[in-house]
Image (tube, rainbow, N blue to C red):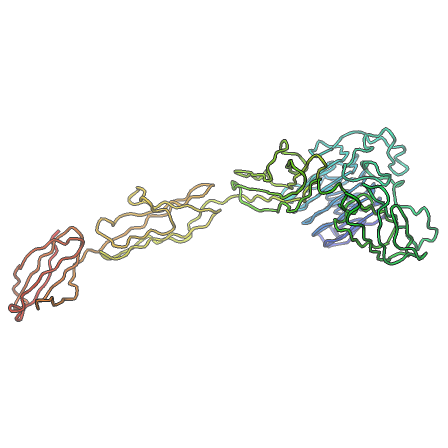
Length: 555
């Protein structure tokens, strides 16, 4: 792919072009065996230009393997590639000589923006303008993650198996083929192997492209089926039969199919004491089920990989992605089987976090934004190792409590129920402490303060302190007024036929019963204490006549 300018969109500069060579929107796309060269155009603020000189990618996941990016150009970001709001993964790629201008940062190599993720494995990223592996400048770099493993990068960057050395090509102008003494030889991910069965190299060259060595008809493609552990003798069923009427075979064998044929292969579940582990396609894992289907769009090499019995580790439950507020406690966990003892070594963005332990969990207390990233765990025993799937940790900035509703004036009658309530927002969990007249109320630690039987002493100034792990917010003052009153309860007749008058009022005070015959002249009958807020007075029925009673509160 060469000479492309990208998909045009109107902008204040005329036209912006997204993806000089490829514009990829959505997920489930793979780009394999491509030479992406001299795409992109433009000068910033002068004429139209390109975002993502070689590839612009937006949304979900894009896999790129066995590709070369050279001499691509973007005037905004990502001379080779730019990914936004999606994930891009590179396997066995060479990315050299790409460039961009300094526009919100200078990223001539591979770049991400706006929650984009990029992972590079077994790749060479050198001699690009500006950063080799980078992100768009603020504020467009929010949520971006870059991880590098077993790569040769001309940049100070952390990552498992990363080197920064001259790659030593046999002839750079002839397809980036590594010289025999290159530091990238047999230095790639040890779980991926080259077609010759050795540990994978770092980078990719034109010489390694899939080239048919048996098929002369360009409409046909060769499917080579191999195995490992054992390296031969594995029976594999193949459907349909190829152009020569051949189908099933025993590794290693080759079948020739017309372009576009969908071929289903099933390997033996067990071979002797060994059990099936995974299928590799051109050195990259494509599944752990013994049955796999591939489309013959070009020559393919599939290898059935076996492991010794059930001794090597196997992950049965993967760590899961999480989004938490800063200051929270985060726990990742993994479930694995295999011969004991199993050890676990966790890593973030390709960098191990410490030595191997026997713990299946990783706990981060008081998690902070700089701890966000891609987490994986490597499980190891005496028979091998396995790496978990990626689990993304997103850490949001915490928010102070904010009080949204609080009543500041309350009047309640003596002996009635008082309810004070606060509503607040902020990063959970929220905690509460009520105060009266500036002093904490013991046990008042919820969003509501309730006093069932209000007394005069309950009047005063109330406030509530709302707290979380970020800080605290104090409410305004609520003035509580208690109306003191006394009243008759409904009278009753006792067992002796006497009239019983009942009075209710403030606790620990007294009430005087007064009587009158004409509602003008009042006489005091007697004074009684209001124990627990109530008292009663019994009038003999023979004296009841025409008589009026009233109550007087004695403070």
